[in-house]
Each structure stands twice: as C-alpha cells, then as structure tokens.
Image (cartoon, rainbow, N blue to C red; front, side):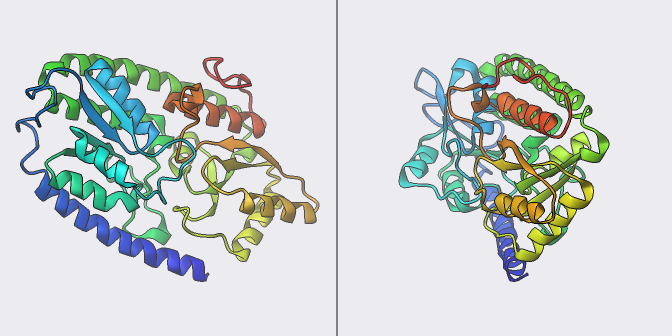
Length: 341
C-alpha cells in the first residue's frame, strides 16, 4: 500500500507539472501556430531540401514518416525496448529537439521526464505538437488511482490512433502548405491500413472464448485495447512502470487466475518479468498451471528494420499473440503473414 500511496503522490505532482507545461506551451507556441513564418531550413524557409521532424516514441515516428514521405527527415529519440515513462533525454536528444523544425510527442504525460526539454524546444520557437490533441476528453481513460491523469497508451486502440494521424497531417500541412496535398494523400493511405488492422484485430480477438478474455500483463498499458476489443485487462503494477506490485496485489491476481482458470499471462518488451514469474509460481502453488503466453509490445515497438518495428506490426503481433495464447484462432504469422516465426 505504501507503493500505491507514493505512486498517487508522484502522479499528483506530475499532473501539476502537466498544467504548467500546457501554460508554457501556450505561451511559447503563440508565435508559431498556423500561418506563422516557418523556421529557416523548413519547407517554407530559405534552404532547399527536406525539413526535420523529431519524435519521441517509435509509434509517432511511424506516423510522421508515413505522412511526410520524402518531404521531411524523421528522427526518433526513444528507441526500441526503452520505457518512455522513465526515459531521461541526453544532451544529444535535447540538441535534436532544438535542431528540428517540427517536434511531435505523445502527451498525456507519457514522456514525463522530457517535459523540460519539450518546453525548451517550444520556447526556442519550434513547433511542438502532442499527437493526442484531438482525442476527445470523453474517450480518454482516467484510472481512479491517478485522478487528473489520463492514460497515455492510446495507440493500443488502432481506431483511436487514427486521430494521431490526422493531427500529424494537419500540423505538417500548416508548417509546409505546399505539401498539403501530399500529406493528405499519404495520411489517407495510412488510415486505410489502420482500418484494416482494426478489423483484423476485432475479428481474431472475437474468437477467444468469452470466459478467457482476461488479459494479464506486466503494467496497465492495455486499457484502451481492452475497451476496444472487449477484454478485461489486469496490470500487475500501476499505470506508470515507476511503481512496484505489492504482495497483496500478487495474491489478489493469483486468486483471479485460479478462479477464472486463466491459462496464460503476458510479459512486455519494456517491463521486468519478475512480477509475472511471481504470479506463475503463486498459481502453481494453488494447483493451477499458468504459462507465459508471449511477449507483448507496450510502450515501444520491436527492433528497427523488422515488421514488428512498425506500428502495424506491433499491434499485429500483440493481437495475434493474445488470441492464440487465450484459445482463439489467428494465423501464426499474423494479418499479413509477416510476423517473425
């Protein structure tokens, strides 16, 4: 319980920081909104060639590259397998933000430790945009233990993540009006792919028997996923990976696994397996066998250059892995037959 109280206090402080960040961004961006003169070196500036976009996480990098095409160079800061909740920007990262023409971040406190760097970039006149800015307040989840703090993991719902594509399309069009037609076409093509991904996910996850639609993962990154696809989602530790699961939490979850006869739990690419292993051992002591159903991608995508290293591949992997581990039916190589064996 001590950890939970500390966790709530921590997020209360972070929520206040978010309010300060919003005010600071409002002031800093007042002179670089729609219709303002682009920075030199941008598409509308004095230098020829592509402009630069800096992004925080790979899921946003993917959108930026898909929408921008060859009109911009996209550089991501937080790499595969790195937890964005805990990531502290290096001097090199800060310089990349200051050198970029456009900065795209998730918002909703996902990149909490990058707040100062994002403010610094905004104060330097850079166009700094949260891709979640079009998310309806009524859509966003706000877990009870984190009052005032929305769950940032919106990319777990492909239909919702489409809103982020629209933000990138519109913001790049404001910066580079000459590319607006290209951005619109590129975004439209990508949105079609996301629609196909959402349909695939809904179809294969519906094959999981209703009693088995319980998704137990290392931390609460799958709430939007659960709501979209009808799964009960249980995270072993809190919304942020800065908290630790207590003994009582483990015991409560072991009870759930035994009573509901849940046969598989999942590990995540950015979170320690320690708590998952404690669950498995606890269930075994009660005479119930639970296996690790596979590793899921939560706060980061797979390795660069792989299919799982794209947003579509990330979600395809998660959906396919979950469906197969919990008794559903899905192709072993996923929606496009491209998942790693």
